[in-house]
Amino acid sequence: MILYQYPQSAAVDRPIPKNKLYEQGAANSKLKQKFIDEVAKITWAYKLSAGSLNIQTDTLFQEVQIFRIVARTADIDLSILKYIDKLITTPVIFEIIHNDRVKVIAAYKRASQADKSKIVLNKYYSSEWLASDQREPLPLILNLTDLYTHLIEQLLPSIANDAVTDKLTNTPKPSSQHIKPETIEGNTPSTEVSIVAKAELKPTATVSISTTTSIEDKLKHVQQVESLTKQVEQLQKKVKKEPQFNRKVELNMRLHKLKEQLNQLINKAH
Image (cartoon, rainbow, N blue to C red; front, side, top):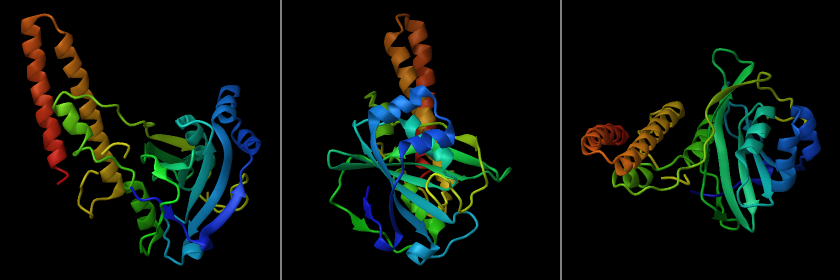
């Protein structure tokens, strides 16, 4: 995972008061307390657009926002990010800052094809903790949609290398933290967002899929692998706990079939 240094031409550096977020989205008391306990400061750091980066845009994405959150704790509740994402109509890449380290978190977001007034928000994926002073310039990508896709792909888990292998060899590892895809009521993406003025608003392992595969298909594939991996893990636990021999044999047969399906799904990516 590469931590990028965004160009000064895209800098906004505008603080976002938490009380404005509360008002805009009608946050309940429980969520407000999470903001108080876990968030020290929120800054709208950069706006990636045709004008700020001198690149092309299309009808799919006009802007991508970079929000920096100074966290009071190492583990920030994803409901905080989800709440902010609901308020901002354009894609947001979050940089969580804690003790001179940075973790990048984002969910792929786009306008609904069926109803442009609604937003489709995918799962959240995150990087590992990175040194805040080790940044690299953005890659030379000439289209904002391609750049946004690249930023999301950086966060996708390389399941084939790590997490899945562990499940297949009966070595459980903690799974990544995700939020299910959903459709969010909201305005059609535009250049108006009241809370920040006029703005459009892995730690797992990299699935190698053809570069011609769309980001939507890549996300679908990764999530299929994650789902099947979870099923394998759950069935392994059942096999281990099952006292009856005949039942254990039956479960092992099911487990073998699941592992075969999982291997086929992983190999499909190569």
